[in-house]
Image (cartoon, rainbow, N blue to C red; front, side, top):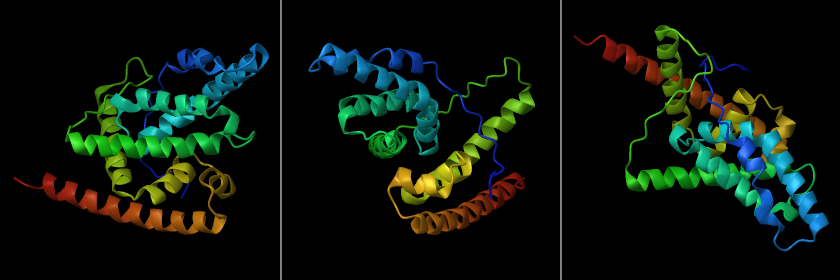
Length: 210
């Protein structure tokens, strides 16, 4: 499937540099040498994975208004658990943390019954009105479709179709067998197509009303 055909324009925040430089809090109980090593590792995590985590949180249902704060939560958890994160397992740890943070954020939003409004931050300094409208329509449609998927299917779909990770990497990130990745991806694709068809039919019906 590869490209799902719904152009999602990402607004990558500029907060990664601030987070990367804010690892001093992890140094309290360390020797100077180990504190420097920990700070360097955390900085490398933030600089290397921030964009991936930010996009993942958006695609896991966190609204634009909360994505920066939730990204910070993910890396704060990583800073506290840094010694427990095995080398080579950093992305798996961060994504699993992002899934928990996204689930908590969605539950909190539902409890408060607040309505969040997406805020597009296109990189193009002068997009024309048609481009802006199309980007907003595509973002809204993709968000609605993804929000309808169960989290276990949504995570696999996001990693494979949007992040374009191979199945073996997804299995490692989610700590599930590769056969489970394949079955969840198949179910996610079926659900995705079914939901898109339903939404487009609803849109056509609404557009045809006098």
